[in-house]
Image (cartoon, rainbow, N blue to C red; front, side, top):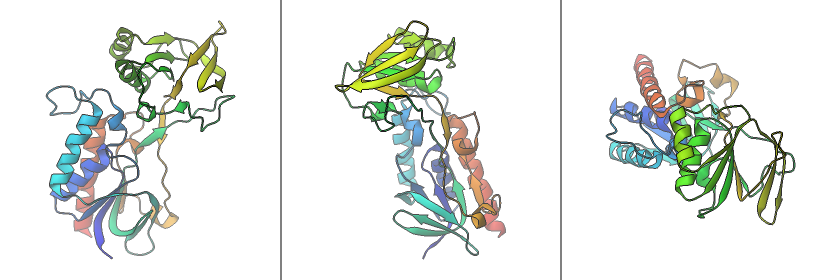
Length: 286
């Protein structure tokens, strides 16, 4: 079995940046990604705060450019899920859904996942319930209700409105938490806002979702899809006790999974590079 210098779990901005930096410094690496290269960066409607961009690009465009760089660097990548990180002896052992890898060091860059919302009357696997605009059926003129008042909710609202969807954003507080410029952009695109409202209960009838709001007006929304964007939580990964004991001694975290509330692609890129440099020093020192 090949013994890698570094295995990176996660192919988002932090994981890919760590891989590029580690490869540049001559380390033998592997990157594992279970779902989609670029992570949640691919959901972004506009990326404007990454150094080097000459104009705003969509998240998908940025990811494509990044993957070209990954390809040119010759990075070893694998589409599979990391099921367990273990440390039975001198090195780490990563059990994947397809293969098992042995490595001197590991960077966990699994990012975040959407917070789930329990809705009375709606099965968690309802075909009208989504957590990402990219998973919605590609139809024009659909009616979408978005629950959430943050940047992700409004960014997705703008994306859907530009794709000819009729969008309403339901916010539980008296004002949105997103940047004012983004809120105004959503309004300019025809996105409606309902403030001081929560979902009381909902039901699906004939492929249509009826959403009953607790807003003091007994409002009922009739939509095709409900998109939940109420925040994110760090993606979990199985790590044995022996591997957990090696945190900072070969096992490191990078990007959104450990950045707290400051979650931006530019921050994740920088943290990925930094952790790769720490890994380099660790490998050379041992």
